[in-house]
Structures are given as C-alpha cells and as structure tokens.
Length: 381
Image (cartoon, rainbow, N blue to C red; front, side, top):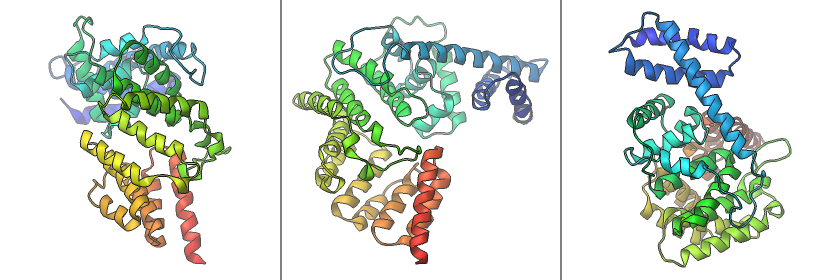
C-alpha cells in the first residue's frame, strides 16, 4: 500500500467532488471513506487507475450518505420541532433500525458508530468528535463494522444499552446546534420507553427532557452562547422540566441506578434552582461521585472538578482538575474558568485564548474569545 500516493491523490479527488457541486465538508467525508476502502482493497486488488478508483468510490459514498440524510429528514418532518409530552402517538421503523444496527456481532463502540452513520445521519467527523478520537480512526472503525456485518442476516437485535448510547449521542449532536436531531432523539426515546420497562430508558428520557427544556435560553439573539449561570430561567420550558422530573422520580424509585439516571438527577438539580447562586452544588458533587462509580468516563471527572470548584471553592476545583487528563476537549476552558474564580485573571485570560483555539465549533470559539478579551481588558485597568 503506497500511502504517499494516497496522500498525493486526496486533494485532486476532493477537488473533483467539489466541482461536481458537493459541499466541501461532505466531499471530505466521502474521500475519507474512499481512502479507508483503498487501504483495505488495494493490497490484494490494486486498481489500474488509482485516481479514477478513488473518485468513483468517493462519489458512491457521497450518494449513499445523501440518500441516508434524505431519509432521515423525511422522518424528522413527521414530528414537530418541539417534542410533544406523553407517550409517542405513532411508531415507525426507525427505532427497529437502531436495534438491528446494534448487531450482537459488533462491539458496543462499533455498533454505536455504525448506527450513528447509517441511521442517525451524522458525519464521520461528528461521530469522531463525540468519541474524542481522530476522524481517520473513526472512519476505519465504521469501515470495519460495515465489513463485519456485510452478508449477515439482520435478524438479531442488539442490546438496549447500545441503543441508549446511540440515542444519547444523536441527541447531543442535535443539541449542539450542528444538526437538529434533538427532537428526533426524544421522539425515539419516548417510543422505547413506551415499549420497554427499563429504568435507564426512563433515565435517558428524563435527561433529554431536562436538557431540552433549557434550549431556548442557551443562545442570545445574535447566536452567541449563554452559559448556564447567565441564562434567563424564565425562558426554560417548565412543562418539559416537570415531565422530566416526574419520569426521573419514577425511575429512581426502582433503586436500579444507572448513569443516565444519575446525569438526569444532576440536570434536575440545575432545573430546580431558582437562580444560579441557589444551585445545590454539594448534592451535585455527590451525584458526580455516583457517576464516577458507575462509569470511568474522563468527561465525568472533568465536570466533577467544576462542581467541586463551585461547592468547595476554586482551589479545590483546581486540585480535582489536576487529576484529569489535560488533553480532554474543554479541559482548558474549565481550567480558565477555575483560575478566574480564583482571582488569577492573567492565567485565566491565557487559558481562555488557548481554549478558543481548541474549540470544536464557531459558537464556542467566539464565546471563549470574548471571555479572554474581557479579562485582558480588566487586567489593563
């Protein structure tokens, strides 16, 4: 396999796809899929025309993705932008597809990645960001999953835990504003809750409802991010909050705690506080302790450091942060916030600027840049 040849052909193939009218980001995704396929096929069946082969495969990958996106949009058109309360009134085959893609022959992580790509409509780049891995790594993982299930009968549905993980990642991608999938994820989770008596299904539904309730307050009229502490709580959807709390309480009463229930409990404590200053941070730290016991997620440890900083002071938060992997996305932003709380404005400004350069999207970058500029202005006074 001549990887130098692949690298040299990539810009040319990308240019061909763009000239055919494909969006640059979609073209990049299609070319990445073609490169992964080349790595698999060429060692045993090298093409006579490498550039033509890559272009053809990339074009087919784009068409497959476009068809999947069109199908997803048709499903989303069936529901309103805001999810209706109560049981889902109608059922389609989407949830069944989620279970079938979570095939028992796949590892949980591969099943999630494949389902997000094939059914959820997310790009390889979005899935890689959700998993905190390079895009090329995720492209290879998805390609391996496709090869594993090719030729298999999709008559053995996967487990509930895998489907819940997929639904949560779809919801998070929609909630970020990059793709509006949050309402679709809630709709499917309602369907699942209506058909399966499982406390973690209820926990995930409660978590989604409580987060979605704050959606209108998360951005200013100019599109800029509004941090939780600064949000206008009168804009929170009290109907969704009440429903989320009710669903959560019923799940917790079964005494089968799982990570989605614990996350929902944290969201409920935020929703219950009349103001940011009245947030019960001590209880939130206790729930993060439960989450850390249930999962080894480094993101939990990062969020726990923030909560400790609020409950016990910024110095305690910084000590907790020191035990967290500093390569995590948003680690630098958390460090900046805790340093600001501790009064070290120069370090905070520098870390905010650094975090802005690492931001995964434009809205976060602009927010962090403004934070750095604000502290630099204070330092010059």
